[in-house]
Length: 464
Image 1 (cartoon, rainbow, N blue to C red):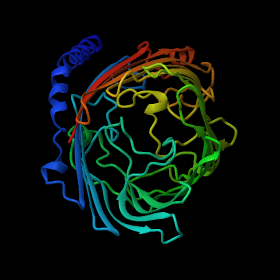
Image 2: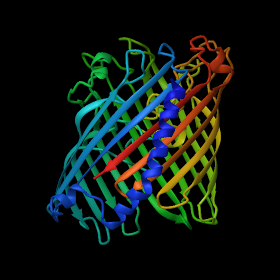
Image 3: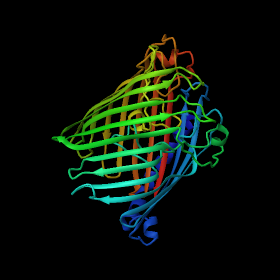
Image 4: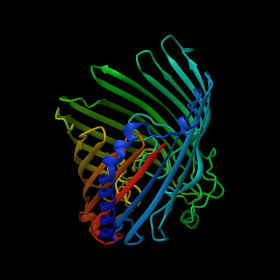
């Protein structure tokens, strides 16, 4: 199955590239068609949309209890609009995320399916320089998405078929020296439906939010704090409790963190260091009356890169990621990645996605290229160990509670290429990943034993 889909993906890629020159010539004659232009480009209204169709194929499933092979067709359709009257803005974004060709043995869930849902519906006020000369501040109320800093703990998902959204209040202040402060108090969107049968049928059910799940915090960024070094500082809080139809781990965790970085620049070294610590308390299980455990967990990302001056803009980077796992020491040590996307650090998600910011210690090396405004791609290798031998490995669900299977998870190789068939209008994205199993994934008691995990995808996004 995997080989057939790989051939299908390669054929589609070749066909698209073969037809690209003719399409490009047509696109150069005029700007691509957009909803904005179709409506006469009204001054106070901004409207846009996109449709993405993706084919994924997976061989040798890693997650326990699922089918050995899996494939999926996902379609994501979005339309967003904002009406700006000056001081007041009214905005909304409708997202329709569906998945096909899956069954009960697939890993498909609310990360792939969330049919006909408003992920944004807000009213905003532009406060201008009310808080000081040279400043600009805004206040938003309603449902919205949030992108903060590196997006590792709070961000809008791009690769995943669905995205995180929040209902509440958000305040943003931009200073005269480009510093930025964001404060928010929200109820995270809980995607529905949650049962397998409804997900497989792409049933429409409005998402919910409630005071049993609260996410709040503050984020501050300051560019050029020392030379070309930038800094981010943040503090997030998550409060979760049971509700009548849903038992939880009653998470009450706090996450302070810091990030210092220098953006890539031709002929110079760039770097990034991000560290976050978590504390608070969590229930040992979702069972009523379960013991409460103190939380002590941490996460680290370190990276150094160099952008060469060649015309194809190669950048080489060495990276390291650490996120603690849970040990049997009386405290809960598994890092919670909150609402952060992981594709850009750990590879494709979707029906793949074995690696993430929990119980992992992983160095890697990356090569990025951008030969032209249309082309970009990368090749990425990383080795992955468990930080704790007794906790489940990253996002795989594979665990050896006795810690007798060692710590080496395996080697992952990932590649991706993207091409604008029609600039600003039609983009092709194709990629593949392979996780070659190490001792832990071969010997853990609940490991599937199917062999090395292989994955590929190809998608086309039309923007209008």
